[in-house]
Length: 85
Image 1 (cartoon, rainbow, N blue to C red):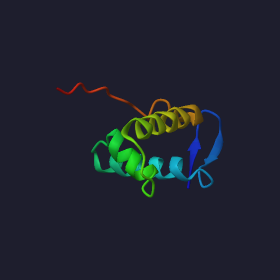
Image 2 (cartoon, rainbow, N blue to C red):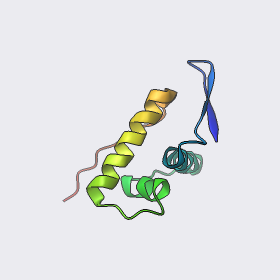
Image 3 (cartoon, helix red, strand yellow):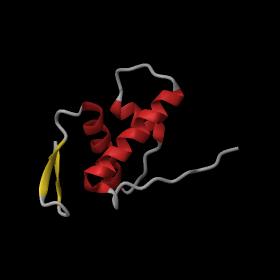
């Protein structure tokens, strides 16, 4: 799986980055359907075979979102902090 980075004029290959690739695919699918995905959904997509604590899952998602932004998707990977309670 890869995507083209117009700003850098390069192809970014995610095939060797399992969780990052699976999270990217989940983001693409949700964008195509006009829906959104939350941290729990991204964690399930990225680490579907692992049992992790909620805090650990959120940290892993945050790191991978930062990596996708760093790879050229800054304008496309958006976050929203939603207060609950």
